[in-house]
Length: 209
Image 1 (cartoon, helix red, strand yellow):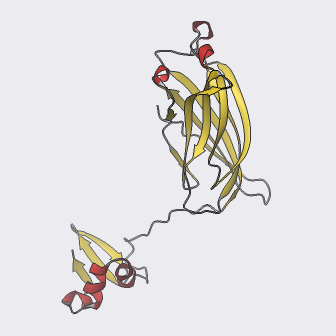
Image 2 (image 1 turned 120 degrees about the horizontal axis):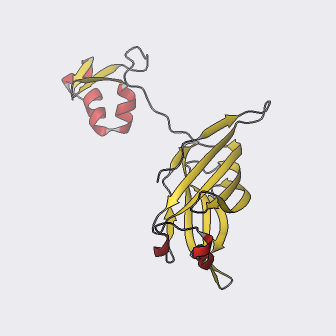
Image 3 (image 1 turned 180 degrees about the horizontal axis):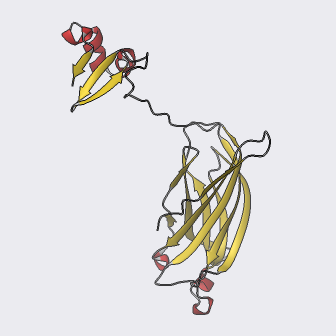
């Protein structure tokens, strides 16, 4: 099941913006986990993908269900964010069965954190009512503060004919794209030859590709 799409943003004076979010996940085929990790659907926040991870792990001679809040690596090596979060397991009636709370600083060296949720044997105890049709429901609620160094993806707008940086128009499948010759030539030998070589296109304002 896809994660919930609840996002909350708040500010406190001149403090950095705090982001709060929830990931609710119905984990399927839980009984088939054997020394492998299952990942929830990912959600994008701060230009990075955040997700839950569950596993069956043996801790101190006891098999445990473990869960972690994870974020994919950012292109920047200098990012960091403080996360306060809790991971909750629900029973089949939607009531809380167990909840674990964590505080951790995420950065380029540590991009996942969590731990044991419940003993594996207890998870499958029929009296606990935690599994329905080989599925369990877990939820992570997290708040991010002290957000630093995230590199965001930027998208160029090639539809603006009045942008002074654009000096040529490419026509691709009938659509006009207003671009910079210098930018394209810098990233493509094809366009470098077209715009600065001995071709008739170099002096045209519109070029059909």
